[in-house]
Image 1 (cartoon, rainbow, N blue to C red):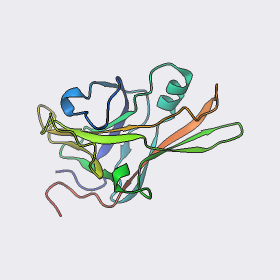
Image 2: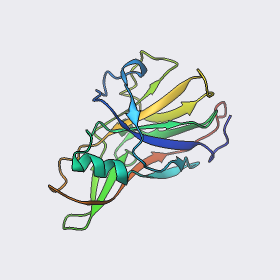
Image 3: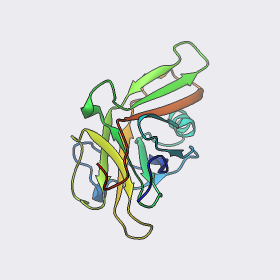
Length: 178
């Protein structure tokens, strides 16, 4: 089991559209890394992920905005965050910055859920938490988080300077501890 503060969280761009109320592990599809950095999950508080590469690609039309997938390759690692169902003060959001008027813009999450290989046909769209987990390298259980944001409010032809995904966790403990 991974110790608190040692779970590395990786982020990628979801390859196909998904519906919060129906997506499961079986239907979640693939994802593509876009060069955004991995981060270590904090023991508590806000976690900031630099997602500038992905958001800039979405805005430029290089690839479709189907949201982000968060996962971990840390064996025994897990991280849990608040979903939008947990309340407005801790829901995930995206901060986007650019050089012209109107920057920065805070975008609330539109869709969020997690999917689990252990319950591959189960939908967690109404859960108040989001999580990533990995049992082992081979065929072990995994959980992935999916989050999606509406970028239509950004100015046309905007050049993205930075984009930060923010997720909040009350506390993260190694599996099996309470």
